Length: 329
Length: 265
Image (cartoon, rainbow over all chains, first blue to last red; front, side, top):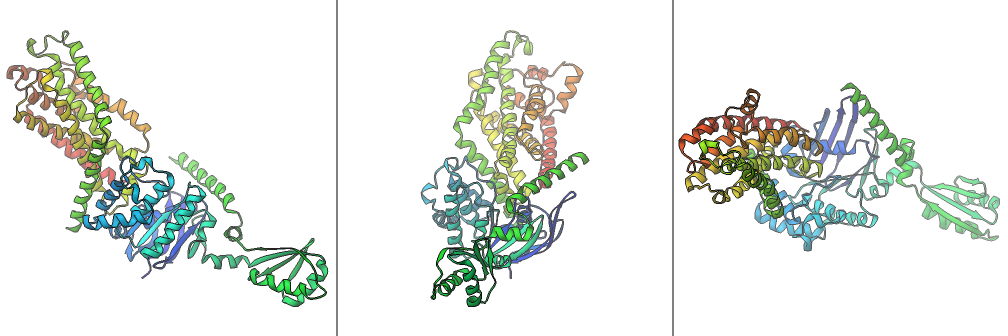
């Protein structure tokens, strides 16, 4: 059984289609990432999966339970960390956890043990009795992750888990998430609009305008853009091009005064280049650099624009919808 | 059966949080006493001479005011704690509750239970002042007063949940405060007897749920302080009628509140 199974899911807000016939499945134990600009429909999809929103059409199964017909079973079997903090900051960390345990029907004895485990996992064991008000942003997020795990969920949803945190804290959160997957063997479904973070996922779905435009491993996605790019500059570019074409049997371009090669595995090509140019009469390599495609390239390749630009235009689109609605009402 | 247990647990949890938060915030308990005490002692003492004819001269105005102030404390605490739903929405905590495997009905009922309990505490604190005002209470009276305060609190918390179910920001709360709570308080008979007032006021007072809270609380609180005959002249309805009307209002408001709260996405 897949942890998540989504078929032709649609969510409309009036005329605006936030999620447009989305289908995908997530295997158990997988870290599955939803990548896309703000307003692409990531949060709307998560909200439908965790039963906060009713789908307009289509079906979604989480841990085998239909989100519309069995919402309570779905809720009991998932943990959630929202985009915005959702802690009671007038209570202590321990009280927030206890409250959660009560809501999810975790027995008192189980709770005592589980509380220690999850607090240790996120490194907050010594702050259990502190008021959440006194916590930093990163600590709050970690406490929320701990809370989301308290009732032994089989799927943990993380909606932009590192939004608004400084790079160092973001890095820490990721350490926890990965430790978590190894220790708890649960499925992790996360959304992010940080490209570098999507690299941590086993598979990524790229979402744009409510649709999934690509779904693959980070490596697979990068391969679509067409491999690595090696650029070098030598003492005799004309000669070098001829020699490399012969030695590597591949396309070698001369771009102004740089030699450009597109190859599947750049790290293995560089030694070959050095060997080919090093045989007498040697051609000196003045500089060489390897560029691997980033998810940014993938995103540009698939949607025709950088993730930042899309963000602005999506906001604009939403605003226009708002205006139309405002008038209608 | 399993659902019922889960929902009862949910109601208990929401109630528990409200009580923990209330007890945590001792400073707020004290500061929230400020306004009722100000009304009681400043208005009470200031207006006493002018109101000397009240109850054929046998009823001190401060004593008359005292049950009204209890009702006031209950009213404000009830509505404020229900409206904390809006805070929870704004600060995200409501989401944690809404995605828990607990029905919306349970969340709304838990909120009514929590707000009522907190309001009852607050009313009880005012009640402690009774000897200072010269209002003497027997144990039996205190028990009945607790029951009446609880009924009033449950009614007003339900009303608060009903308002909060649709409110998206705290700005709206000021409006409610000015246009609903204050009039409710002033037109409840807490400040002055509703006997012989202009017709428009009488109509509004009759439509005001608080009227049916203030009236029985006053009758019970002043039972031993003034004679039956005097009480007759300031009351609106027999206690049992007040309780019956208030119960109907409570159940209706609570049903609407639960319905409104369940419908939100």
